Image 1 (tube, rainbow, N blue to C red):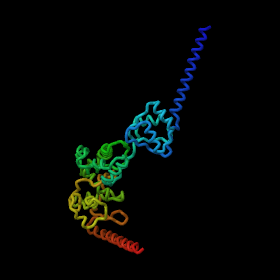
Image 2 (image 1 turned 180 degrees about the vertical axis):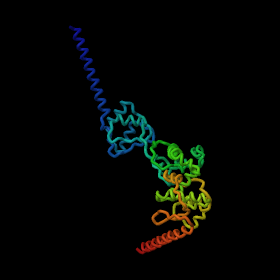
Image 3 (image 1 turned 30 degrees about the vertical axis):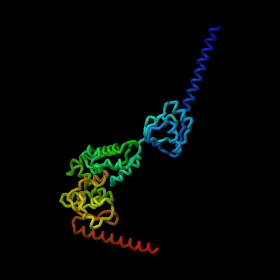
Image 4 (image 1 turned 120 degrees about the horizontal axis):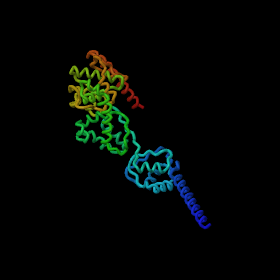
Amino acid sequence: MKKHNDMRDWLRGIALLLIVVAFISVSRNSRLNDPERIVNGSGAVLFLEDNITLEQLVAELDSLHVDVNVDQFLWTGKMLGWRRFPPGRYEIPRVSDADTFLSKVARGLQDPGEVTILPGITPERFAASVAADLRTDSASVRQQFEDDSVLSRETGLTGMQLFTRMLPNTYKVYWTSSPESVVRRVLSDFDEQVVNGLKLQLAASELSLEEVTTLASIVEWEARKREEKRTISGLYLNRLEKRMRLQADPTVIYALGEKRRLLFRDYQVDHPYNTYLIYGLPPSGITNPGLESIRAVLEPEDHDYLYMVATPDGSHAFSRTFREHQEKSRVWREFISEQERIKRIREREERKE
């Protein structure tokens, strides 16, 4: 009988132990997986510039006004061994359990951000935009387009030739990416979409890849209306074929270093990019052309136009002969003169007030 009682007591002890273990396990899992331990009502994103501790992470979340059950958060981190967190950009879910969020950050599982590159910009503007997205200094980005940069030496391209390949697009990059790695990412996209994607068109063109991107960069600046790109491209190619100077205003603007209405004396500036003075294409592109402008050079409109002049609506008037061009230029000059007259009258009236 005593033996049976001992066995019954032992079984009760085991059952009680299993109940306690189950209770602890359920309680532990409940605390770990409570979906309302982190609430991000403001849509804040966590940026970590250095390695931080669990306690510092709590402070970072507090500064972002993320609602965290601090005791629960610290308990979870210590229980699971999540005590150190590396630099990176981490998106915070609207509602999350502490375990999921902590394990993500502790493992450095960053969320990529977006870097948007616009067409027709300068290296300085590119550097400022990318630096803002990466939260780095613009000088380190701008340096990638110096003639002595690692990428320039590696590719055999000048800094500006390299910049001409910064294909406009929106790219997913990690916040901790170096400026060099971002430029490499864009170059990879250029190779994919242009070098490989337009392989047949490039092979059929009489221009080299560098000449294509150079002319495309001029078209990018010149054409305010996308439907004119192939027409403008065809015009420039006609001039090149006839060994005429391009006489492209964007190259003069590039030589001057500022975008403004050009004066007669500007066309005389002695500069290797001034296509009113040099024959052929300038030494490199003058901006980063979009894929559409590159296609326009590879698939130009077939026509006999040799001249163009701006019109009041932002488009161009095209001409086959210089006499026709002179007449259309006269109309444009009269429009400009009238606009300047109206401006002067308005300024006088404002001074009177």
